[in-house]
Amino acid sequence: MSPTALREENKLHRVLSLKDLIIYGLILIQPVAALPLFGHANYISRGHAVTCILVAMFGMIFTAISYGRMATLYPVAGSAYTYVSKGINPYVGFIAGWSMFMDYVFLPIICVIYSSITANHLASFIPYHLWLIIFAASFTLLNLKGLKIAAITNWILMIVMSIAVFYFMTSAVWYVSNHNGFESLFSLHPFYNPSTFSLKSVAPAFALAALTYIGFDGVTTLAEEVSNPRRNVLLAAVLTCVITGIWSGAQVYLAQLSWPDWNSFTVGLQTNAARNNALDTAIMNVAHRVGGLTLDVSLTIVLMLASVGSGITGQIGASRLLYGMGRDGAIPRKFFAHLDKKHFTPDYNIMMIGMITLLSAVLLNFEECARLINFGAFFAFMGVNIASVRKHYFSV
Image (cartoon, rainbow, N blue to C red; front, side, top):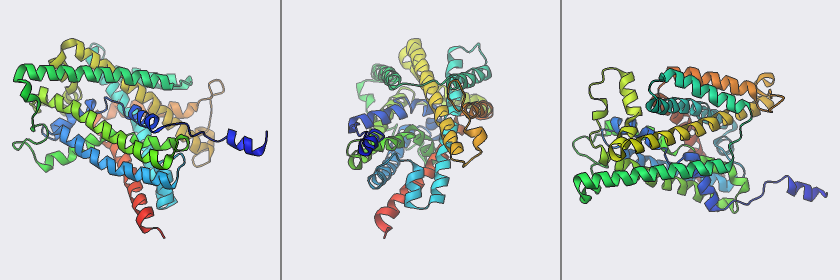
């Protein structure tokens, strides 16, 4: 084989279209991303969760533009680390890379927590903390055996989730129109209720609502396999945020119409733990109201499956990132670059992340994990935005 042919064989092929890239981004974010946040975002914002999701969408669109513009300059498998290193400084890029690593670490933690919440909602006779152990151990054992989640599995999961969400939205429309009339489906109160609106309450909910969009930047990792990456990566990143915002906003809007009393979830609850638990399961209560036990159980199972899928994938990503850094000598190679001889998985990393996941899931709640994930992502997003502005307007 000639050297030219060999180079072509070892090169990633640009076979993905704009549509393929958008679908990939939507799978990463998941069509049910906003629903677990509903209770907390609605409570913190005093009934303005949909407003928070839409405002967060505009912020993410600007960040998506920055990612896309950096991809036009560096049309390779991109990341915050690459773009910030190239656009600002390698040391700042290193910090941005570690900030994104926080997402990988905390993703399985928040997924173990939410999987346990949903499982406990379905089978409350099994203690919540036992569910934490079951899910943390399951994620770890499956990944130790070299589990590979194929693209077809993601497609099936996305279709199932989309059907469940459509079922929920249809039931909500039916419930609201039957109880309050068809015209009640068109209301400004979920967007702005003058009796409860205040920037002091809405502002903290913006950051929480932004968790809906975490993962859109994953489309840049396929920059070497996309046809016309200088155009399609930017468009895919922006359209992924827009589609997610509209789809998620519609879900939360209907949930707010179906349960307008945002404060009722926590009435009479004296402890923070009890209030957090009520807000964690708020969307299941809405589902039960609009669709009965069938929708409640269906949505709970789908949310649990989504959390399981994301948790396993997050643990895989974190373990492989540590493996790559260990292999390069950035962190101790003997431990972090160790591979299991049978399954060829970075077993030490997987077990370490599994233990961190379980311990953190016991100590933290869903809202705290969401804020920590957002902190890491926001720092990296800020770095990419600054890098984009610097490269396009201040480079010499």
